[in-house]
Image (cartoon, rainbow, N blue to C red; front, side, top):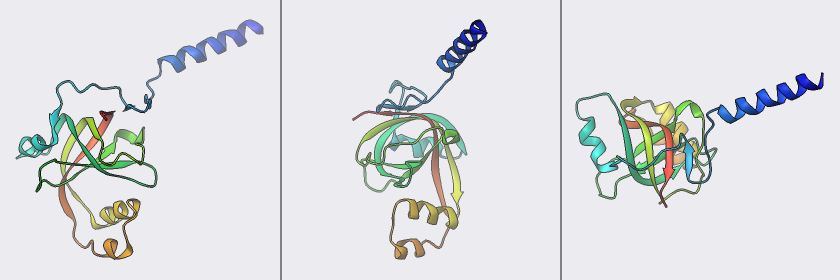
Length: 156
């Protein structure tokens, strides 16, 4: 009996040690990544010209984070005129701290060109705690580049 308890505990420890869980150490979220090979956010749009999706590692500045759970964030360029890019997290396996605005990050995953519905855009606006007037002003779907990150590295 005691032998089977120790065996079960040993197996459980082994499985938990081998499981791939998000690191979440305050610097890494999701898969542990490095900044090696990352391109700047400014280079994403030209690379996406004429294609629907692309596996990329991107560095950029966080503009906004979902204030409900940290389940999405937006990246912006340092240069004016670039649209923001919404970043979600693969399989909702991890969330970001809500106070990342202005911080620089590296994200690793897939960029996609897609059309976001009015309903989803309004949902994002609610998550960002926009005013009822700002939410009501969303009346058109938006074609945009979005990103599904499997890992995020906080640079500063």
